[in-house]
Amino acid sequence: MPKVYLLGAGPGDPGLLTLKAKAVLETADVVVYDYLANKSFLDFCRPDAVIHYVGKKGGDHTLPQDQINRLLVEKAKEGKVVARLKGGDPYVFGRGAEEAEELLDAGVSFEVVPGVTSAVAAPAYAGIPLTHRAYASSVSFITGHEDPTKPGSAHDWDALAKSASTLVFFMGVKNLPEIARNLMAAGRPGTTPAALVRWGTTCRHRSLAADLASIAEKAQAAGFAAPSLLVVGEVVRLRDRLGWFEKRPLLGKGVVVTRSREQASDLVRLLSDQGACCYEFPSIAIAPLADDAPVRRAGRELASFDWVIFTSANGVAHFFAALAAEGLDARTFGQARVAAIGPATEKALGERGIRADFVPERFVAESVVEGLLGLGVAGKRVLIPRARQAREVLPEKLAEAGAEVTVLPVYETRPADQDPGEILDAMRAGEIGYVTFTSSSTVDNFFAKIPPETFREFTPGVQCAVIGPITARTLANYGFTPDVSAEEFTIPALARAIADHAARENEIRP
Image (tube, rainbow, N blue to C red):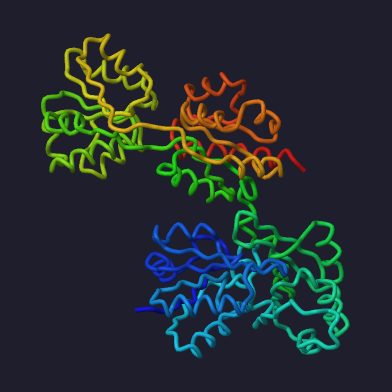
């Protein structure tokens, strides 16, 4: 049924989007989103959904409000399900009620999905509770977006100044001097604690605390700009004690993830949990083979092998896809023993009903060879489903030890068709702290897009983080030494190593 959903996108942290809003995004025909709505939410949308950006930023309106209203009505009357994604909550200084009235007048069915308002979330992430039995028993939400040149104000400044409530001003940074002056003129002491929170709950989150008399001057010196919230009240005194989000070691640091899009999510999630602003720049793409007949044939003959060695989760996924196409499943392994090169590969096998018989202590081909030789692989038939392009160490060493080895390409990696413009712009702006490399192919393809001489312009400010000695050697071929290396050759270990490195640097820098 055609309908317009007014969705609260929350304050920016993707984890604060409601389950209901996510479900609407997953099914909507049309999505209309604002400047303050996290763009990553568009990943939830159907591939064929029509996306409209109608953001408003500092008076620059991509689409005026009356045209936004018209767009919502038109799309609904075309029989579409429309998701109107608005930052924060639609009804808290979001003009959602105005849009609802327009829809009602046009005879369009609508539904409101509330969102987490930044007025609550941003101060909480900054360590500021809006109420506290020792400091404040009420809270007031106020717009700070008033024209200082108009003759009067819609606000009762006397009531606000004399109230014991915590005051939260939306969009208040532009008129911050006037807000502070009006409150003090109405009797609020200049010593009242105040704080600004900018881009609250996101990786760009910043906060600043001062007293009411000096907050405007300090905000200007610190370069605070919109979007920022102003909090005024005694609860600000708890910021230093209760602050938690700003202790994340990677907060505000840009990290480039060069893994394929299919593989990037785990690393992006782990880095984001530490505060990083992640830039996905896939230097490789994972693609199925044009002809998977050899893979299907190997699946039918699987029971004839003594060992099946998987070197990546991608290899597992594509091999089992070929099995499924033949109507086969894990039972076709028969008595064959299975090895996995690392925990991610082991997990992928487990999800498909296969428990790995062998996982090496170090997750490189050399350790797999050493372990399998100890398990008597000599004279055995070994199948290695893997990428078409891969190191030959594993099959060569096993063959030298007397194993009968069959290398079976089940997928291929290709250079990703990725425009480096966004990454280069971010590097020039000083927004990138680390570039991650998880394999030799990510290194090669990264420098095919961004030449070494160009990348060198941004070092040592931009640092390189790698998994494993093989990747480090490939990086060295281009003239760079890793600044961060994971002790274990896993994605979680790489994320930990980057966070630890950043924490040490944060301690050194004033």
